[in-house]
Image (cartoon, rainbow, N blue to C red; front, side, top):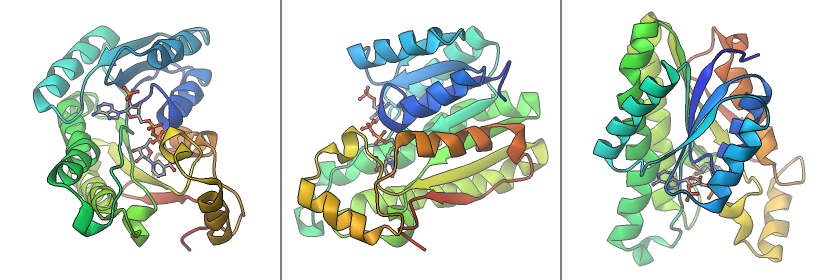
Length: 246
Ligand code: NAP
């Protein structure tokens, strides 16, 4: 489905980003993985990807640093000879009730989740314009659509991604560049591993399908949106949440 395509995925060392990278590689795409460090997890991911007979390379970059993003983007474009798909997946949480949120909790979440998505997209957009083709997929969250107690900073960053996605879709549609967002619900990854057993049980009650999602569930939609199968879809926000927010 993605044979000959080149994809950049931020935050692909683990979790949802890794699942998307594996799904893309299984479908023939070469992958540039962006992560904050050359961790053993990140290196293991590269090993798994290359075992699928595609090219996969790790690029260390903090997406909230615009200068780092620009130089890594140029490096990736040169190494891969251009890019066809960008997945803005890197994200963090710093949850707390509003009065207890420190300035750093607010800044870091907005900086990584929202500004990081804007910086990375800005640094790759000329590449897509030159190709007159491209698919950009931003990982938002169902929380950005419905809100959530204890996640005001995170929900604001993810709602911002929705506005950004629709604006990119409008600004670049004529250049045949599509931009869509995925809004996952509760997906089992390191990000949600901190939740206690009772919290998970409470959550399940809110989900019509009665279970948490898997990173693979998000990856399946990312494959569709990255491929030509979705060639007439842009500016959309699609939930993968087991019906949590209907
Ligand atoms: P995760 O397991 O915590 O993985 C986060 C990834 O982002 C890691 O690869 C990490 O790289 C990378 N990252 C973090 N800060 C970064 C930075 N400043 N620059 C570059 N990379 C950075 O998270 P996840 O659960 O897979 O979540 C992935 C995305 O889905 C996030 O945007 C998250 O908000 C969203 N999401 C998750 C859920 C869920 O239930 N899990 C639900 C809705 C939305 P390192 O390994 O180098 O730290």
